[in-house]
Amino acid sequence: MRRAAGLRRIEFIRRFTKYAAGSVLVKWGNTWVLCTASVSDKVPPFVKGTGRGWVTAEYAMLPGSTKDRKDRDIKKLRQDARSTEIQRLIGRSLRAAIDMEKLGERQITVDCDVLQADGGTRCASITGGMVALEDAVCALLKDGSIAENPIRHRIAAVSVGICGGKPTLDLDYAHDSTADVDFNVVMTDDGRFVELQGTAEHEPFGGEALDSLLALARAGLKKVFGLQRKALKAG
Image (cartoon, rainbow, N blue to C red):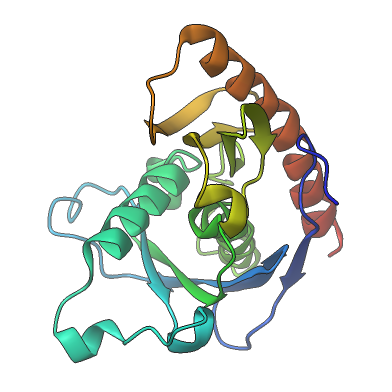
C-alpha cells in the first residue's frame, strides 16, 4: 500500500508520436495522458503584430479513459465545463514557463488527451505538458527558428488532500472521491506558486491544515521535478 506522503509511479515516455514538435506519454500511476506540443505561425488576434508568442492548451478525456464510456464532446457540439476549466488551467500554468518575447510571434498548442483516468489528470497534463513544451522549444532552437531559449523555469503540479483526517499526497480516484479537502498545487522548479486550487468538500479547514498540505506538495513536487529533469536529460 502506498504511503500517505508517497507519489504514485511516474514515467515520461518522450517522442511518443512522430509528427508533433514535442510529445510525451506521461504514466502517473493508472492515469495516462498523451501530451503533444505543436508549433504554428498563427497567433491569437491580441498577440498579432506584437512580436510576442503565445502558449495555449486543449484537454480531453477519450471515450475509453473511464469505466463508463465518455462521449466525445463533438457529439454534444460543445465542450463540457470541466474540460474547459482544466484546459484553461493547463494553459495558464504552461505560459508561466515561457518568455513570450523570446518565443517570437508563434503559438505553441499543448494538447492533453487522457487515455486512462485514475485521479490527477490535470496535474499529469501540466507536468507532462511541460516536457512536451520543452521538447518543442528545443526543436525551434535546433532549426534556428529562435535564437534564445524562452523557457524561464519548469512547471509541475501535484494534488494533495486530507483523507480520513490525514494529509495525503497525490490523490488517485479512490482518495479524490472521498477526500475531506482536495488541493491542486502548480509550482515552478524554483519553489514559487503558479496556481492553487483548493476546496473543502465537507467542513471548512484552517491555516494549520493548509500549511501541512502545501508542505506536502512542495516535498512531492521536488521529486516530480527530479523526474522531469531525468526524462529531459535522456536525450
